[in-house]
Length: 301
Image (tube, rainbow, N blue to C red; front, side, top):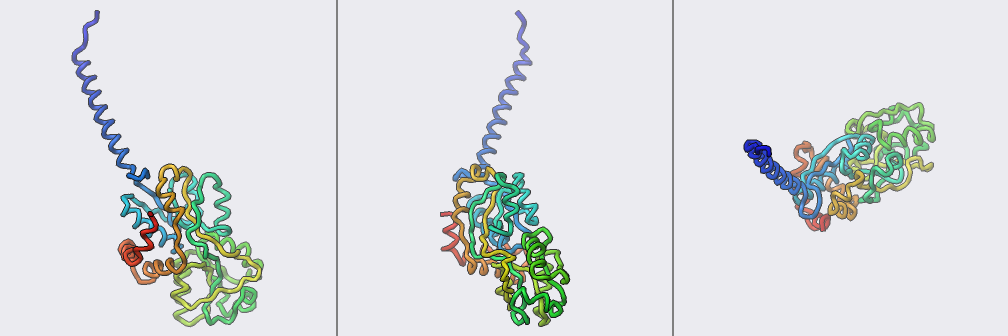
């Protein structure tokens, strides 16, 4: 019979105790990642660059969820990368998917890899907006009056659905090929809009409703008799595949989420129209939540 190595037994015993301790720590860590309602505690929200309605909705949910014990992280990106990130699971959820027109191609492209959690606002639309006292009322008149607008149409991000619709539908349909169509970013468009309004000059920009600019500036939408920008749209919450299994409670809350345009304008105005820095958004949204407590309480009920 072989002799037992006491040192080996001792080492094995210590290893077993250590393994059990580590397993206990791992269990405690796993438990810490799950809330009492069964949801994962950490959440990554993708926010579209330059789209204030989605940013406002995201900050609203960030405040609400942090009060419920979640840890919420934001990742900013343009529409295309957001949908790509949702499809690969890099992001958990986004609150700015437009249907049936603006982001339809992304929903078709990523199919089963993303999940439509439903619309939270059904009063949205894409527009070409001009100053209220501009000499035209329809896109049919824009080509003939291009000089009045400096022969320029100011757009937003190159990858946006609104940009695609303007390039592929609006411009060729209404013969606007000779106008300079400038695309860069939503902030740049808003800066051009602000400067023109302040100077009393005509300006034509690609825009959308709901947007705080309609409360801030005297604007009107040019009629689109050919329907190149589509009809009324809805703003949807969109998640990665598997989200519903890992966030069962939040999924139900988001599916029930509604924010009408008047409420959205109110939230957008205090966030984007007060001269506040982005570092103040958490405080500003907390104040808005306190002033709208009856509505906010319904989000998690």
